Length: 604
Figure 1: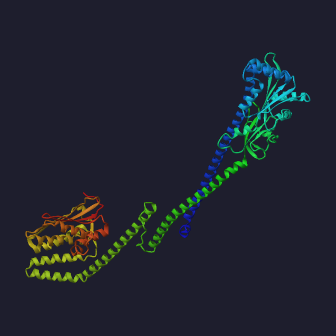
Figure 2: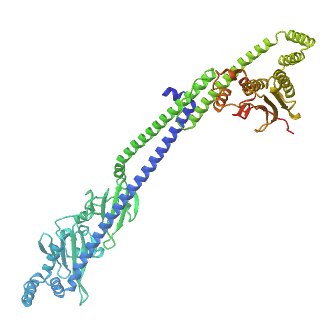
């Protein structure tokens, strides 16, 4: 296989060019698919991070709203508002006495006070870790914890510091308690939370009596992040305004300052953090906390690794299969081409019998058919030339034999004719005269003679038979002046006339009439010579046999091989298959033999 294909430079170039184009096409397509797929995956992951960031931001806003709702409930319930304002303005024993008096006066089975309200809110919202109430005038703070514990702590020793811390937290609204040292004051048992602060004012006197501090758990953000079935790639980071981490899904910077906080902006971008990363960030509208989603480049590349390897394998297989199929197809064409080249070399060496197999409808099959047809035509032409040469040699031999001492024959015939004339046999003398003229014309060296000479010879031949058969033979010769000088083969019409005379007289007792005519043929540039008789004609079966003999399909029949067929073959060998003899006959209507010859002159 390799020897056949790669020893041909044309197929080498085709395979090389096709291979290069295939490799470039597949590699380009693979690069485009890889870029499209990786970009699609990146956009998908960034979209997932945006959803996560939005979910965390909404969660923070909802927690602020829930904290504000607690304050609104206090203001909407007058009894509860009076209870908490009394608590903020007086010491704890007086508050207990106040609650007792109100409970007795209300005659209700349950006491609607600050303590029951705070416990109810802690139970309703499990994300709240602690609710604290700060009294500005009494300098104490009461804490209600989710574990159902509660404490009352006076702030006499660090009253100023606590007031400043709470004021700063109230000003920022949301922050970590540890930022102002409130984690110790609030005695928070868990770290990592965030606190929302609100003023508690007396609506009648418009005076700030204290503050309400609501602290939420940070792990509630983790639940908000994992609400979906498939967590996003990368990690989420929630930062306070001072850069401290409220929430890190990787738990690397929980409660610690994030060193790359300055590089995170509330947009989509790429940033050099601990590694190069894609970032999606937004700032919560109600809490002011920065929520960001981060997708590190290495993690994204790791997700691409499997796809990249599969794409490389698929591309390599596609290239190998495409080039392999092309090679097999090229091998088939190369093999057929080599077979055609081999056949041409065989023909060049003279072996015209070699044939190229055919059977497919393509260009190579057309070339093979044309080559086979050319070889067949060459063989047919060679056979025709060879046969023609053999027949020419035979004709030359016959002519040579017929020319042996023609003058001896002329003199002998003339002596016999004179003797017959002296003896009174004038009819025999006339026949001898005609016979001598026929011999003289037959041995002439020219092979082509004017039609008028051939017609004169035919007249002498017919006259000889007329003398012999008396009134049984009549004839007429019609040769127009336009055709008298047309060159024809010598003795072209003699076999046809002889056939008409012999067969006509044999089949007719009353005699025969022979007509010789020359006229323009039915085909363009054709001269037709006609020899006709009024005999009994030829039967259809016999006529079909004669026509087959003229076409050479029955060469063993002697009738046509010596007479009519020799004339037909001479005309065809000289002028081509368009010309030759044609036999027309009908029973009882006579027979017409037409000789079609080429003619380029004008017909008057």
